[in-house]
Image (cartoon, rainbow, N blue to C red; front, side, top):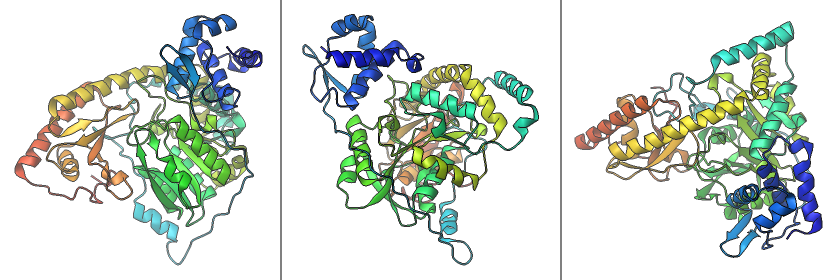
Length: 513
């Protein structure tokens, strides 16, 4: 049974007005999680039986069971049949350290600067204007409630008049910053306030700002391997040295980071849904990285690019919400959850980074379009964002299941799908006689786009396979594309043509078609 002081803490937490919007089981789960993080409930300590705690809190036993299930899913507690629930073993947080920053060194020479040359060599990050199956990371836009959006936009224009046509706050419109803070706190377990939100045009802009403001040329940054190509390009363009760290089924291998002699300035993560493998970073590794960042005065850059779309259970709370040391920069975007043309992303910043990041942002584009920001704020405040995400989560789950079925029906001799728990794309590993580059080339010849996995590894030495985006495409489009791809693969293997190198640099998803 909880001590009196612990039980009182749970009572205070669940009855606080700021938490009223959360379901009761979520409030109880967060309260117990905070007791664990604060050290009030140490590793191995037993938790009250669900029936006893339900009686103490005057709630139903099902509510306690729901809270315990989520704590177990996130790795905070262990449940032993016949014995009860116990706090899991995990690393302790280290105390906060004093902040250190360094100025960016200009690398310009005659003609293009070294940074300019690096950007040119990288090719930038170019998205397809008219995506076709199976372009990855593209949401469905045909279901979006355009009429509702237009009505909300008209309301904003009527209320603000010409004021909305002027320059906006470079940090972002306050109503949107408030809406974002409320959303990430409720849905992602973040520790955000409106004054820590920086509204941007995209997650890519956020990564570019991190590279510019936090990293000097030749500074080290640990980055997942494989990794999102846009992140690697942003950091390399700033002159940083990207040190690849392998991932496994539990995310990035933190032991490598903790024991590395390299003095890295930051680590880049996609912990909720690793790109491209789909792995979720385990709790003990999250806590280890938080401790490492505090001890070494480094930064954690957390890209939470598609956490809205989780199809099995609930997503784990974000790293930023666990980090009491304020060393984590949390990056989110509405490009995946709503539509790419919106051009609104955001960062939740440590307090000491708000002013420098906002100042740096003014040198890029000044501010995000005010009308779009205010319309999005109204869309979120009215509950439309949550409703739309829930609808699309169901649509995408059905499309993922269909694509998996179609692959096993038509492509089983070539690939094995690695079905993810969330996201907008399906990783597949090659198992047949066709090489990765042959597969990519064969798809292009029949109008089908797939992204090879090898190019996402630092040394192009990963397992052969590719990503198949499914979210933007209707069931009939998915089926037609799979049938075409199967025929193309069979033709390629039978003819013996297209013997491209599996790890060729031409496996760039953004080269012109």
